[in-house]
Figure 1 (cartoon, rainbow, N blue to C red):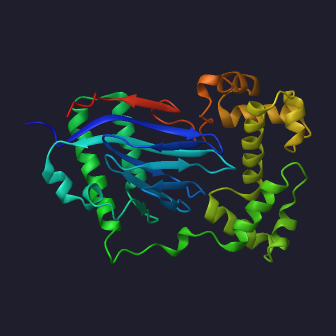
Figure 2: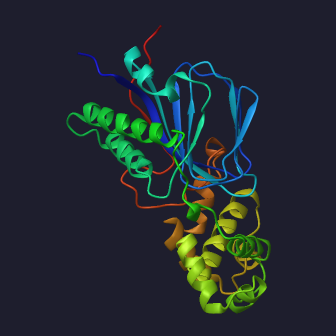
Figure 3: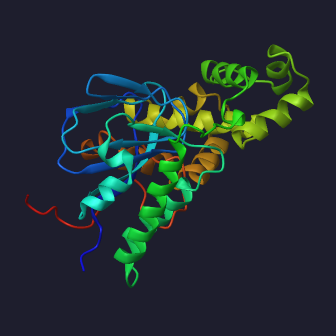
Length: 297
């Protein structure tokens, strides 16, 4: 008996800030998971959706759609292209047959992130019976999404960043080349140093100091690809006065030296990709998996 789901290809990629995927129509289904909220705009049949919260986008065969990714920061997303072998599967999930819903906002404790990563692990490693295992996981993922679009589904209030944290993050991005003091950041948003540090860690997963370093390294990575300035000049421009300290942190975060980074991602063939934010996954970074050719209809 044939499988209910046919997987065509999938991937986990991070596109550069400002990348635009122009209007297109596809002949299969595409499910895209965005782990972080961004100003990315998904437009389907002339209806725009701003992806300000972690979410899943489902595009059905023949739908005219496009993406305008975050203009300021690289955007990571995981995707799967697939077909349903049986009409009963389409009927079971309204996401697959109704154009009324194209985006699903994820709740704080959603299983979708874990299921998507596990699916890509199977696609990469291809363990015994990987198709059957993948299908089971994927149907569970669709069930999870179906529950989220029910009328009584409620979003967790903790998914939205407090205004003070959002303001501090924006201030950091606007002043990366300058000395940044955590106490001053806290005072700027009206919080004590201790409360600001605790809340920042809670909502971002980073201490304020580590977030500043992360954003400086992220900006350095973008400048390395866009400009021909020396690495030393770029390090200073993003706020590092010690070039050797910059080199050590850059290598730790990106998994390669700044020189290797520029050489790898400066390749024109990688033009639309940006280096991934997360490292140490169980499958290649910025990679697409070809799984099965689509059958002619």
